[in-house]
Length: 160
Image (cartoon, rainbow, N blue to C red; front, top):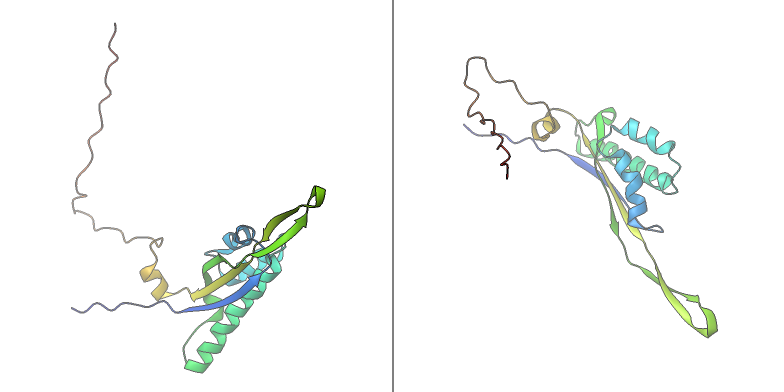
């Protein structure tokens, strides 16, 4: 028997050289990981973080990429059935800056940049086959459950 592996088709979008630290961008990205696209857009839209509009724009771009590629390649992708597969913020280059300090000196500091990458995938039969969080099949009745662990006996305290 030959195994047929279902491949998850991902569509991604990037926003490079964004003027924020990756740590702050990850706060917004962690909110939307694993959510359906519609829910992710709603949760970003009502977020008060400064990076929320940028992340929303990247997410909209990933959705548009999915629609465009499905039209170009003749794939059957349902945009309403997409979910956020991965959402990461990588560190970009740092800008070195100088701040004036007392007595004619100068202190150096770094402005951090980040690259935001969002990929969406279609939630369907292929995603369920490879998704480890999907509910497992129930084993047939009458089969043994396998080895059971024995309860560990407690040791009694020794009196001195």
